[in-house]
Image (tube, rainbow, N blue to C red; front, side):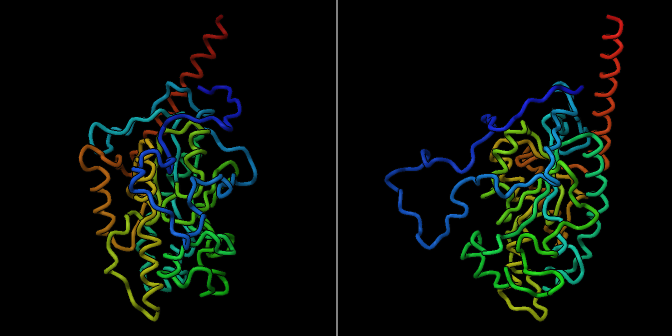
Length: 336
C-alpha cells in the first residue's frame, strides 16, 4: 500500500491557479495599485508562513496509501457521496485558537458565547486522531499577524483596533503570532510532521504559499474542520458588552469567514472539498446551518458535507482495505 517517496520539493501541477499574472485582465481597464496598500499579500506567498511541527518532514498521505486506494463517504451530501484518492487526501484544521474558543479569550471578551463552539471540539479531536492513525497529511491554520504588524492591512486596522494590543496580559497581544492566546487549544495541538499555516486573513490560501505546498505534496482532496463555519456576510449581529464598536465588528470580520472562506478558495483552485459538519462551530448556529446548505447546494457547488462518524468510518475502511492489500501482496511475494 505504501510507495517509496522521493522529494516533492518544487513539484507542481495544474490543479489550479493562484493569484494570477494579470493575463486575464483587460489592459484598457488597468490602473495602478493603491500606494497606501501594503505588499504583504500581492503574491501567493513564499511559504515562510508555513512551518512543519517539530521540524520534522511533513506526514505524507501518499506514503500511507497507494494511488489506487480510495476513501468513500457514501453518506456525504450531495448524493452519491464523496470519493477521494486516499493518497491525495489531507485534513485541514482551521483556527482552533485559544482566543476564539476559551472563556476569557478575545472572542469571549467581546461578549460572544464561546460555549457554542465547544461541541465541535470532541468531533474535531476524533477526526484528527483518525487522520493521524491513517497517516494522512494534516494542516492546521492560525489567524495571526507578524509581531511588527507588517502584514496587517489598513482595512483590518480600521475594523479592529484591538489587533496587536494587549487585552489580557496572560494571553499577550491580540492576533499576533507566537502569543499565548494565539496558540491552538491543547486538545488539538499539532504533533511532529503536521503543517501549521500562519495566515494574516480569513482564508488559508491568501499570502501563505499553501497552494504551492499542497501541490508539492500532491494533495487534491481536502477534509475541513474548524471555527467558525460560515463566511462573513452579515455584521448586524454584533454584540456590544463593554467593548468598542470597531473591535466588535472586527470579530465578525475575523471569525465569521474562516472555514467556508478557505473551502471556497480551495474550490476555486480545483480541490475537491468535504466539510465535516459536527467538527465545525459558530457563535451563530443559524449561520452554520446556512453555510452547510450553501456548500452542498446545486450538486455540491462548493463541496460535500458529512458528519465526523461517517468520515472516520470511511477513512478506517480505506485503511483496512489498504492493509489487507499489503498482506496479500506480501503473501504473493513470498510464494514467488
